[in-house]
Amino acid sequence: MSCAGLVPVMALAEQAGLSELALAKVVIDPHGTRVASAAVNPAGKLTSIIAGMAAGADSIDDLDVIRCGGMGRLFGGVYACSTLGQFLREFSHGHTRQLASVARAHLVNLVRCSGLLPGLEVQAFIDIDSLLRPVYGHAKQGASFGHAKIAGRQMLRKGLSPLASTISTADGAPVLTGIRLRGGKAGSGRGAGSMVTEAISTARAAGASGPILVRGDSAYGSKAVVGACCKAGVRFSVVLTKNPAVQRAIAAITEDSWTPVRYPGAVVDPDTEALISDAEVAEVTFTAFASTTGPVTARLIVRRVRDQARLDELFPVWRHHPFFTNNTEPTAQADITHRRHAIIETVFADLIDGPLAHQPSGRFAANSAWAICAAITHNLLRAAGTLTSPKHAVARGATIRRHTVTVPTRLARPQRRPVLHLPAHWPWAEHWTALWNKVFPTPTATGPPAHRPTGPPAHRPTGPPARA
Image (cartoon, rainbow, N blue to C red):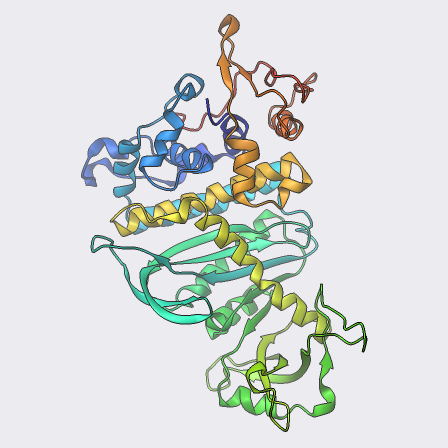
């Protein structure tokens, strides 16, 4: 077997109720499908897809990884990739909404059973952003030309645009609360208000009893997002587009109001003992959306830096970056906290390096279901990393897959009991054994020594990746 780590990982998924949630929430009418058998056992098929993604699959054909070697002997009810492709093509918009509710409920259960998101009860951060995934050919439904930034330049690119929201804490890596696939030409902020509302509800259900801060860039500095935050009673920190009202507020800031801001890791000039970065911050009270029926008054914090393209001017030329917030932290600290919104890019990097490397189907709803399964897989791997070690709790998804999932092993069945013989001199044996013992706790579960080629204790794993 090439993916022995699927045993504890998928057992963890079952402990969080993945199959039960899918069986209860995802209902596909067999009379309205193209292939009647495609609607049978959605829980088992969804779990097969997630297991394949956890093993590194980034297309429907790659899902055959869960059938190679001795996987069929260790797990029951594993489906062929052609069957899983048929199943995905039966999805509609309503079915993807059902699957999205499964993803949110499964995240809440993962937090409770794995210790995911430490410090959630103290402070939680919700980040929202979108990206453009390129597609090719004429068979992709919803594909259209949208704006993308490549190497710092804006350009049009044909693709599909997922909108994602994440939860993170001061000590915990971000996990996905939701992801929605949209057409390539969709505006970045379309649907952001309802997604923020769902993310806040998920965070509260997971145990976020303390303050919550919602962060976003200029696409989410809208009345819909800010209004959703105010209605839910949480804090917001969003960038505002520099319209005339914002520019007048920036111009009203006096010169003595600007204070230098020291970012983590800032470099100090050894000669002058001053920060090499020339960023300064100031704030002013501002009323946003004044021309609407729901104006909001809060702090407008502005960060200014020297324009590096105009350093030869007689007077310094500044570039201003305003954001609107009701965060109660001091001005400089509020700016640092807001700029940590970029942590959502690490989630996008994990998805692109994994299941979202491709949009595998020509049908839009199938690709939407694929994206939600990718979000469930990301959260599952993050929970498995949390149980493995503090290092793996914040590691990239590719690292977690390499250290804990794609582990070659020999499957033996003495006395008809499956035993996994792990590699000898394996550097991550101790971490993998720690994950095994936390998922399958037994009074004498000590795991194999790191220097011995024997596998984990003989145990019939519960919760196969594709259980009927």
